[in-house]
Length: 321
Image (cartoon, rainbow, N blue to C red):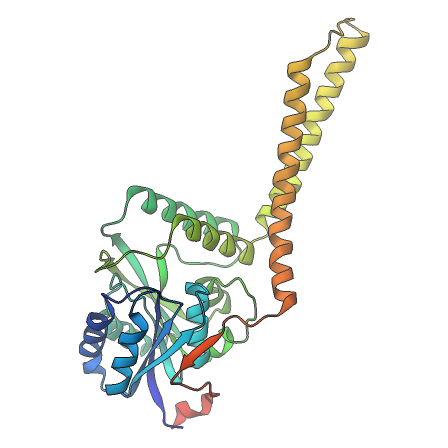
């Protein structure tokens, strides 16, 4: 097997307006490196002509590879598929919307030469995004950082370059609900970052709806923190304490002050309060159990309809060649 120095993983979902420009910018940006490279497009069930454009590129450019999913499996699964199929000794993850500049990859490559296994891109500014999205992203990353034992960098996405040995470790993580940037942080190694200003989307609409963002946040929290379970336990103790005080108050009113008029409002408030805490606790426990069940079923992460690249084991020893 020929040695690939750099692999670029590009998850695709309805990006027909961006693919050609992205490829042009990638090839232009990476010319100074003068290394053997491959571009692996992972089509995550696009409904537009994205796959047709990728096939056309692959017909004329040997370095263009693709994986075509049978349906939409999600961004993190698309990246995971790319990690399984790439052959490069260094691997870049970048989205196709051109918010993350391909020109930064050369700087990330050179930063790795200083002895790092991971170099991730950290956002200084986020252009053309709503105040709500900026606020929710800021809140999520800082909340996640405060409740996990793993140091997950804030203001970062999946745009990064990593060493082959880290890719092999990620491929041995079988969980179904992927949170790749958290897994990379968990793996350790020497990691650093480069700062950049994130551009607005070049064309098309984002596939990350608020519903998907919420699910993504939930996957990140449940994968790397037991805080919600601890919160449910603590809430149980707090509610039990409040309930004891209410019982004590009721007994005092009944037997000392002889005030035992039926308290319909207080009764309903108590019942609804206790019921709400119980439902929240059951829901939190259910989220963890559902993720355990998904892993126990052990279904494949994705189904490939078509591909022009085979999954082959890449030996670390190749790096010495």
